[in-house]
Length: 82
Image (tube, rainbow, N blue to C red; front, top):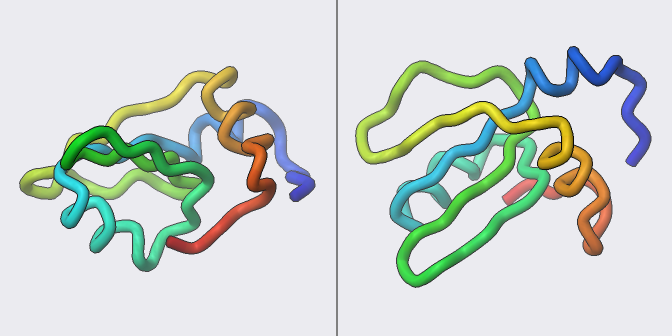
């Protein structure tokens, strides 16, 4: 997928959400998911969009440019909707 935005815009409009797998899956159902990582019962998803206010049980964090590039160029390619 080709992005027609500046690096600053993309970084400001992307984030990572993490927490229990079921909560992350529910949250991601209506998000533009770039990448998902799973470990045991936990999951982390890289999202393209504006970070929402805090939600109970989920942790939100900003991502770096290198993390964003890795998510955008993931082997599966492109944006998927979880």
